[in-house]
Amino acid sequence: MAYAVHFAASILACWLTAQVLAASRWTWQAPRVAIICWQAVGLALGLSAMGLPMALGLIAYDRPTGSALLALADDLAHGILPAQVGVVGLGLVGVGFGIGAVLLTTTIRSVHGTIRAQRRHRELLSLVARRDPTVPGALVLDHPSAAAYCLPGVKPRVVVSAGTLSLLDRAELAAVLAHERAHAEERHDLVLLPFTALRRALPWLSRVREAHDRVALLVEMRADDKARELHAEAPLAGALRRFAAAGHRITPAGTLGLGDRDLDVRVQRLLLPDRPPRLLGATALTVAATLVALPISLFLN
Image 1 (cartoon, rainbow, N blue to C red):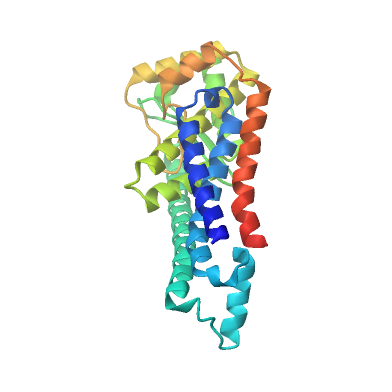
Image 2: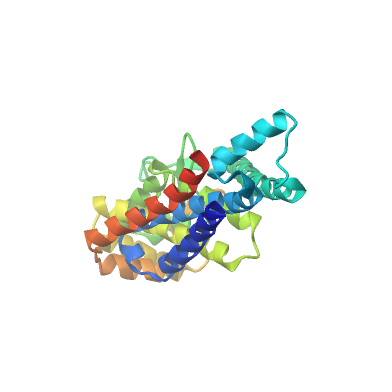
């Protein structure tokens, strides 16, 4: 029973940590640390959700879940099943594996859907986009609406629209291109992927949707930070303001766009930079590592 209690405690700790992360504003000043924390919460929660029913079903073995699963497999291979396990215990173990299968299947389907959308858009770009010497390293779409996005992948593409070129001055455009290249370099599409998959698997859970939205915003803030390492805050803030005023913006499926999320919040953050204490960031990373370590240790022992 102790191992089931540990998994239940891990689920509770993940829930509380997610609550704190969602309500905290220090995450805006340290988006990279906050993203790692959200990833740790997601991984620990998934492992604990699998482990709890397994641990309940394997109470009779009175050992860590990983060792108990090996013992169960050995017993079943020899045609033996402890009386204390029974059909209910096997059913609970099956529930645990079922949760893992659902998470894995949803992730694979999400990966497949994203890759398919990216492939279609890449083919479309080869037909309708053009190179422009004033925008080196990017493709230009002849469309009047504001658009600036990264099409991630092995060969990422940065795309801007003709409407964006007329909307921004040279310094603002340079900052926007740096923002989009940051998405490609740090593979922010992979960062978002598990949260997108979880949202598709559990669309009725508001906390899951909130986690996805928070991480999506942090990804944009992280790209903002990378852009302002090369350019001053003012050009990027000016570009965000112009995108906000432009109204209709284009961000195709499978891409990461400059003007996707909370533009006003991002402008305010850029103009009022404030770094959280290093101790706070170190504490957050320690909590994240502890969250992941608990369920993994229960499976590996």
